[in-house]
Amino acid sequence: MFEKVLIANRGEIALRVHRACQEMGISTVAIHSTADADAMHVRLADESVCVGPPPATESYLNIPAIISACEITGAEAVHPGYGFLSENAKFVEILEEHDINFIGPSSEHIRLMGDKVTAKTTVKDLGIPVVPGSDGAVTSNEQARAVAEEVGYPLLIKAAAGGGGRGMKIARTADDLNEAISTAKAESKAAFNDDAIYVEKYLGRPRHIEVQIIGDANGKVLHLGERDCSLQRRHQKVLEEARSPALNDQEREQIGNTVTTALSKLGYLGVGTVEFLYENGEFYFIEMNTRLQVEHPVTEMITGLDLVREQIRIAAGMPLPMDQNDITFYGHAIECRINAENARTFTPSPGLIRDFHAPGGLGVRIDSAAFSGYRIPPYYDSLIGKLIVHGRNRNECLMRLRRALREIVVDGIDTTIPLFLDLINHPDFVNGDYHIHWLEEFLAETT
Ligand code: ADP
Image (cartoon, rainbow, N blue to C red; front, side, top):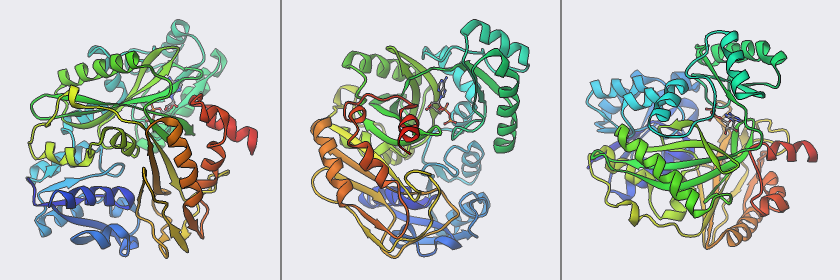
């Protein structure tokens, strides 16, 4: 096992990784920008290294500085968290050249799934159902038009390099097509310096359901059930739950088996998430994330497994200590993403948290790097914490979430907490009856 791990991230996820390391007897190295010198992840780590000025491109994405930090401190492995360098194949290769372990999948698998066009064709060949659409990238508007005639409108134009919902445009009719293609291309070029696109059928009211998987170096791949992340705004997840209120056990088993069979053919190592849209009883693959997800705690709550611990063990060459039959699911879990944003306009609200009080009690978990007196810097994403609740069933989970949301105090800045307080009383949410556009429709009706 590793003796020292460098955590190449900040905020709640850096703390999350630190906690797993501590419990495994591994010492930790935090990296930070000058803006984060007093941050909680720096305070708790055994050692810390400043890797640059506030902009992420000069600090948390500064590969030479991070490699030097490993060398200076003698860290044998790097945990990337999510975001930043977590899906950067080049970074993984540079670490390899320096004999430093990457706690995550191979650079080959990161690259394969990072390009959404190759990802889609690869998983399709492995037997995973995909959204009907173009076979690979489309290089001309005529080609897109031909696909549209086959699958029908509305059509979704998507960036091959896409992420965070950028480079995604809908063509409702044939008249919209040319414009949708040129805006998607321009947006993708600006965001990812790549204007390759592909097209697929736009599904009207699907749910977003994703399957968590984990694979070891012996080729064993297990699934840890699904998460429902249908509550989204601008294609960004806002609240996640496990298990999905929409699936029955037969559907769960079927999609779990399809995914594990496919990923074991690929020899996938580490944790990963296969994302689907689900409509009228059918699953359609949209993408695979080759890293730990923000919403991983809901899976941990219902399986009792520590996903970060498993990631570290796998990276150290250890086999998964369980089989699929050993994985059991208990109760229900919900996660609310608490962002430093106005709950209605979603305008970022960085600044001083005057008072922070975390809720507690049975079944309540807070993953956050915030504290009273913490000043949220304006340079990074607005996630300040995750409130995760677990109950024996969905109803108990909802009751517990309601009281935890009433207990939590984050004073001095705007947060998304009032939005969750509104949601928790809505009959559609209480009944689990929602889809990927539901939240935006709710916001439009109530704002
Ligand atoms: P990104 O990597 O940019 O987040 P994804 O492919 O994961 O892109 O899609 C993000 C979200 O966009 C999905 O959760 C869903 O809300 C929506 N979306 C993606 N593909 C489709 C589709 N074919 N039809 C309808 N909505 C879609």
